[in-house]
Length: 184
Ligand SMILES: [Zn+2]
Image (tube, rainbow, N blue to C red; front, top):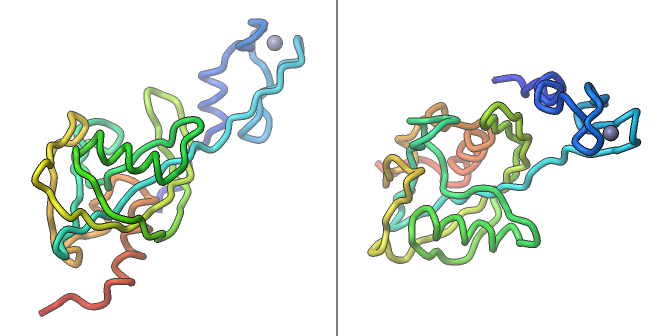
């Protein structure tokens, strides 16, 4: 398993000056808190909420191949970051509509897992929440630019190691355990 990102060193490289008063090298305490000795600013780097969906259609699982880094060319589930003042479920439904242009039925909670999402040199730490749902129709399926390819697969033929992120690998393994053995 990949160890978690060393967030402190990376945040130190990004926040080289206090964002309020401009003093160089503010203190980064315990991975999560910036403290400025000059102006007293205390700023917390919080975990970002994100959600992903294992979408089934006629017992086939819909998976995306990522078009961009991080994890370009690897598997992912539809989903993304939750916006301010949005519920996890509304955010996930919005992300699915934006990424695939489809609507899905009720979400059934699967599990959550922490994740690292390094983007443009910033080490984002996320709490990913995974759900299972059903797409009744794929007639309007049209992937957005950040999806290189859509795959509709028999879940047991997918290797968890093909997923870009540790959280999705864990969730996919948990999903397989709920599905029981493959049909022969
Ligand atoms: Zn300051």
